[in-house]
Length: 476
Length: 142
Image (cartoon, rainbow over all chains, first blue to last red; front, side, top):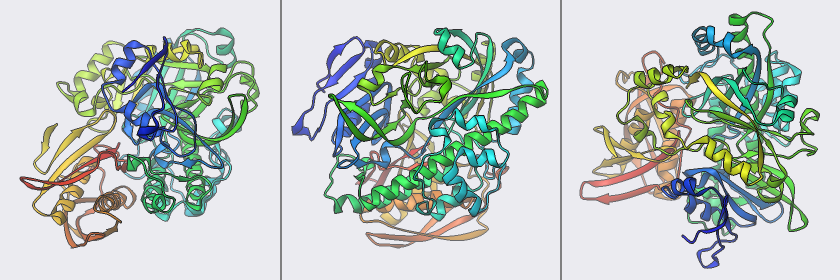
């Protein structure tokens, strides 16, 4: 593959029309990360994305990019709202998989003294849901309301406080959701799963602020060194997974109808303005709203767990909630003109800069909080969106450290109890629900999150605000 | 790649998980693939064949049929909360499959989850023939 360096943080695969590419691919990476990226098929997948009809600007690869299915994970692509396509594979099965950061009115020392009790309490109160039934049973009528209202529905039912939704991307609900476009099967899969984390790479982490890099931004976000925070990583559970499955099945015939041919069937796409495209977007938005209601309900159960351990006075407040698997209609500037595009973020986070009208008042001066979880043994980062993201990446950055090792490789030569012991020696207490949940997510299975952050900060896409260290981990 | 169960092999993938199943005929291959999916999602060891469930799927190609069939199985595991262990394919044409699944209502204490499977992907999907008969390779989003 012809990969040209642009500068220290950027590489380009130039458009090759003979291969069917409709745009360049731009990869954000340093030398070390690039070497890791080249070991799997993620760059080939980023090239395939550049073949999407109606793509605007380059197919973008973030520094945490790794091989996905269809789209690479860590990929961003914008398509023209009038003439372009929407790809369910560019959103993924876990629609609105995302991250919510909470700040606690507890210090690291106080939490460390009660760490086991706290982790065990959270493990009891916030179910993973891998056994089937979750803590909230919804009627279909409730669910249909929830699919339109998102976080606000959960708050209305007593699962949270009104301020929680204010600090959520899109205020916890995408407009244009239509529950009628969500199949009965998807509703059945989701009806018992509200308030559950799931498994795989989903988790709850009790962390503390290790250091602050941007005091003004940290102040605006209510973060200070030594403070305890909680990171919640999960998505739309079976409801979102089924929406993706349903639409991928419909897309095969639809692609033929619209004369679209692509090298990977998982990239299945249809014109945004087609009936199938509009139906998918209406169902995807409903699933996204389910994910926000899910993270909202989890916050409610977390508050209960914290109060049982630290007393009724303890506060858990939302710093921010971002989605990293989504397609959103946004306006951006491209070559000096305004463009109306659908931004696919597949394992990528929105990172709007200071002054953007979509940000809550409290963050207008500093930029949108960007939450980047690392692996369970290392660190996570809070960043703030910067101007560079609007110039280059349709307001997007990375979403994590990025996987390096397959699940099978991660398990080789290790036992879960050894991993738990190693982490405990580093002050990290872990509880896992499934047999392999902890093993598959060992820290060595991921890239170095600090290297990933150096690239997005160095490229001017986001600014570093705070580095977080884990203390307690709950895995699905 | 390593042998994790006599019925299928696990295939490595950076983020997700795949499997390769073998069988002498295509209908049997689809049954073995369904069993592999169930075994990846939950502990299948103690599942009793108390009930018979009828599953069917359609698809415009052999590959589409496999993805839709496995998605049907996944819906029964995750949506209907069934514990399924063995499958017998009764009808098989190029575009339609139907068959029986044997199992019971899932009891999470007896059949704990191994992995939450989100979906069946088209990524690197292969159906083919080798010296042992038919094989398929399927990657799952987990």
